[in-house]
Amino acid sequence: MQKTTSANTASMSVSENETLIELKNINKWFGGFHALKDVSLKVSKGERIVLCGPSGSGKSTLIRCINHLEAIKDGTITVAGKEMKHDAKSIDSVRREVGMVFQSFNLFPHLKIIDNCSLALRRVKRLQREEAEVIARRYLDRVHILEQADKYPAQLSGGQQQRVAIARALCMEPKVMLFDEPTSALDPEMVKEVLDTMIGLAEDGMTMICVTHEMGFARKVANRVLFMADGQILEESAPDEFFSNPKHERTKAFLGEILAHN
Amino acid sequence: MNQLDFGIVIERWDELLHGVALTLALSIAGIVCSLVIGVIGVAMHRTRTPLLQAPVIAFVELIRNTPFLIQLFFLFFALPLLGVRLNPTITAIIALSINGGAYSIEIIRGGVESIPRGQIEAGAALGLSSTQIFRDIVLIPALRAIYPALSSQFILLTLTSSVCSSISASELTHFAQRIESETFRSFEVYFTITGLYLLISWLIMTALSSIGRRHFNYPN
Ligand SMILES: Nc1ncnc2c1ncn2[C@@H]1O[C@H](COP(=O)(O)OP(=O)(O)OP(=O)(O)O)[C@@H](O)[C@H]1O
Ligand SMILES: [Mg+2]
Image 1 (cartoon, rainbow over the protein chains, first blue to last red):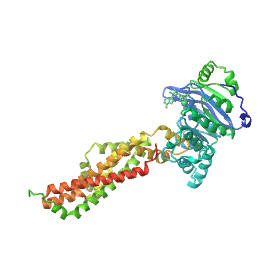
Image 2 (cartoon, rainbow over the protein chains, first blue to last red; image 1 turned 90 degrees about the vertical axis):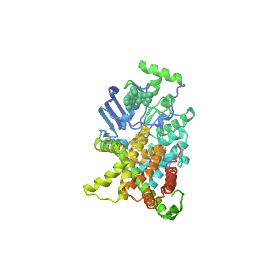
Image 3 (cartoon, chains in turn blue, cyan; image 1 turned 120 degrees about the horizontal axis):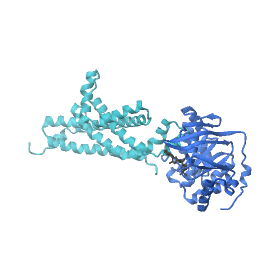
């Protein structure tokens, strides 16, 4: 894998002062298993963070805590200035600011693409159908899939489905996007179209946290790469530094394995 | 009386057709109410709130472990003691709905449990409430998954409606019994009735499949 210092990064600015997400000493347990151990993380507006690490290290769990798909035991999570407690109201207000894209797309099979995208606009933002569809079409166009609007998810390829999933999340106009291995369920020839969509988002200034092992994407887009192992963030640095000069032994071992496969 | 004589059946054909229409109406009412009870019961069960969940479990267990005829008699003879007096046909519809509803809850619950977690999580991440997730995301794919089983349960309900003749509800079997007791042409009457029940089942099945094709026919 060659080293690329991306030209794009220059156009992606990070405003240092505005914190969008702050995790303070969060702990997550699955029964007796300590999945997140006192994790803290601060994400500023406009940051593109890549989260990597071995299987079972807690990457998914960490980002799923941010929109309360998993409930933490202690610590605090603040998103766009709102602290998330366990009550429905604060969970809702955080979810309004956070979009999520899953490994397995999770499109709703019984709804046409346009309805997949407009459902939450109608139900959560209470827009009329026509209004919601205008917004949905705008974002479908943005991920270059507008012509599929009247098909059902099963009629689309994996890459197309994942782009719809991205559009569906964008429709809610979130302040931050979470990606949980968005390309790892895809056939190799479809990975690029999804990564290109994500790169486009980053260039437009979207704040994002991506769990991915696409190291080319990390080099090109990320401003920080975090390495997780055993429920902790062991290392974090700018991508160039992360790949050329990893400090932790576990990071070196992990990179050795990943890069051997790429 | 040894000769077969279908003349009697032909003579009272309009009465039998009326019975067919009443049985269809009774069955359709029972099916619609069963479906409503099934969906509401599953929605209550899904809340994981003991106060809503426990009555659903108790209801399903009670109905599925007692005979339909006893449930029917209970409604017909016991309710009047509590001051509730209903005509036999209304009682029959209620009994069929309660019985069909309990089985529908069981079947639909299976469908809901077959929906991948990711579907619910995607809805939650978009900010939908759990009621909205159930209604807009889970319900249609869940019904689709169990639609064949639910359809055969509804055919069973249709056939079970003949038991309601025992409280003299207006339906096909009751009419048949009346014709039989007046003419003593048992074989001819029940032979004809068998054919008419086949017709009724076929009509209900056809209607159910066309509803299925309309609502659950998205590509998967
Ligand atoms: N619902 C759950 N119940 C019990 N244990 C869980 C649950 N979800 C995750 N875990 C455990 O928590 C740990 C972290 O899981 P997580 O899915 O966050 O890992 P990951 O880093 O995303 O791994 P992968 O790269 O395989 O996706 C794992 O050991 C996993 O077995
Ligand atoms: Mg994971």
